[in-house]
Image (tube, rainbow, N blue to C red):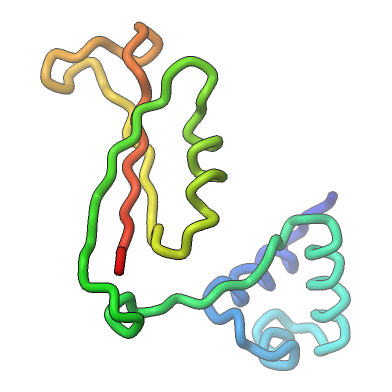
Length: 125
């Protein structure tokens, strides 16, 4: 699928405000509202846009505990596999991949059998 500069600008506008109207986005990118809608529909149909979400203050949901969880990948499990598995849970609010570097506390370099690690941030009720 071709992803041109206008598509990038439309996606950027949606990332900034997923509730923006096609008209508002069109004003930002120089297209009519129907042209923006056609492009968004195409981006959704091709899987470039997979959905829309809302950012919620965890305290508004009564979640008062925050946890940082570190997961280690072994064998064929990749950080992407872990990401797909935990993305089903709205409590997971962020993630960061943290591969070990040779200078990290004398740990062996990546690829030396030391598992990769992925840190997840989760707000829990």
